[in-house]
Image (cartoon, rainbow, N blue to C red; front, side):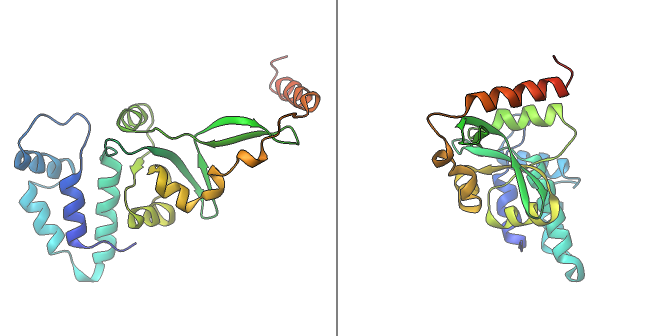
Length: 193
């Protein structure tokens, strides 16, 4: 979970944000630095390189948190949206792939979250949405930042393989009567029938 001045500067230079005006590279870096609360790119770079040694970890961690909360996912890389519920569990957007032998839904994470998904989420919700691209960012998100994150599918699969390996639980002949009873009970509990 350690970040260095150089890794932060490289990440910063690669960061794309929503609604940025059409600018030349240097102008864009100045624009992005201002979005993070700095006067310009040189001010940002100077602060990163001369961070106080007694609290450099907190400074870098907080700065990466701001960058991850601001940036958009890279084009051409599928992401899944995860929600860090606690240190021991993670939630995820999912889709239905079938029923198990007990009549319960079997679901797997939904891939395909990208630029528009991130922009829509941020426009609708007040919650932060972190765009994670590296292992260090993933550790920081899971252990410190929490909230929602867009994580590349390959990284999510390496971290949580069991979320993706659910096909073996699907049965061809699920207990339909049991499923119908559960649905009826849930609808009744919600006052819908």
